[in-house]
Length: 626
Image (tube, rainbow, N blue to C red; front, side, top):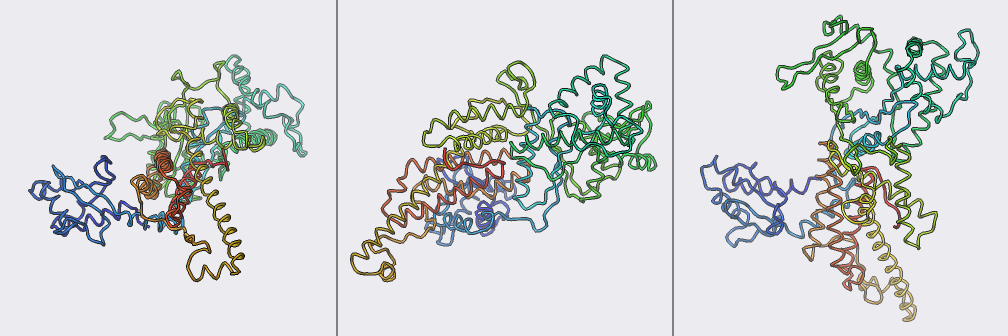
């Protein structure tokens, strides 16, 4: 199904062509002066220089091609009025019937008429990136929330998306944990080189113990050279494949991942792949040898590097370090090997990384190196979505009241508790339902509060504002959906009551209800059957709501193409406002004309579908009531 603006622009383009001008000048946009018109075309301004005519003259001729001598658009036109305004603007309004027909088509089509690609892209989406044996904290929130939304938006647009968490599960941090475990539990079979039996299935530690061990070991390694050397040795032995250390490492990963999955589930975030840096380890040596043999990599101050600078760079881009002077690999090396593996296995059209924007230089180097060394084809797009910081009200990175880094599960628990207090104010909701509802609304508050900001910008986490049922918030969007569902539910109840009354009246008159309905096309009491069909708008507010709904396809497509979830948030906020304005000005359920009422119910049904589809695409859902 074509976008509404494309259809309008096509008619305007034909009018330009009929007046003797380039059809491409007919591009139409939503008016920036809604008090004057609904849509506008500035093509006459753009064509003035080319055709050596005053823009107002061009605009007048185009308007004449659309309206004819009487100044009124024909019956076949999508426009109800066309005006040429100085210095050369074309102010446009569209017909209510055209808009109603467009929405009826949306209602009838899969995915609300969104046009899907003939050849879907394969996208590998890398987001999450937590470290094994460390708790998830607020710093992991944005990657999870933004990445999940990008994944869902791309899938809704028909793309094939493979999501990968890319765990930090390799390197010195593993050596530090193993070293400290060996100090505390030296008799474990993992540390006995002569042990040949099966290793225990149950891990000799809990996730809480792991989370305490790592910072302790890290601190100690900075103070004790012998301890650091031992950790480095254990890291080397692990990476060389020593049986006992590999078995212990697998236990560390298993325990950590189980806890991560629980926390990500609380955010309604999931991944197709739970791979980590370790999965790229064996691919590094052949990759490095290829880089050297093909002349891309060379030694510089003992390190192995690849030049990635470009003469057009405004700032010098340092060489990409592949191996340090001691032969150790880096994050860069792992990322390059991972790109090579993803290319070989999935042949992606695009690989997207969602990380802190402070890693921008890292990804510039990695992407250029991957292209230069042929690890990925020139046609494959590599994209980094860098996000800003979540800050407290003081403008600094969000912390606990004690000044420490807040664990993600605590942040979720805090916002759940805040929302539960508000939900409990509705005494009609039972306690168990209130808890479930609070979690749903809290998740919407958390995710919408993040996603409504452009990803690259920092934002302030404001619990009070985010959990408000008014303003540009997740709870406000959900409350709008719940309000619509309540109206639809009451309408269905009215229909049942009317049907029961009709049946009783028919029995009293000694006739079958269906017989009279067949004769009149109405119920026995003369009520119209009221089929749910969207009718042309009867008021400016109704038309404004319909126009907002009609933008759905364009906004969903744009949010995908620009990897910009915030555009969907802005859209559903505007749509919610348009609905609530219409709702407050219209007595929907008490309307006596049943055809009009049925048209409004059809419109509300579509509004609810659009809102629900969009929030699910953003990564949250709505409760039955609030």
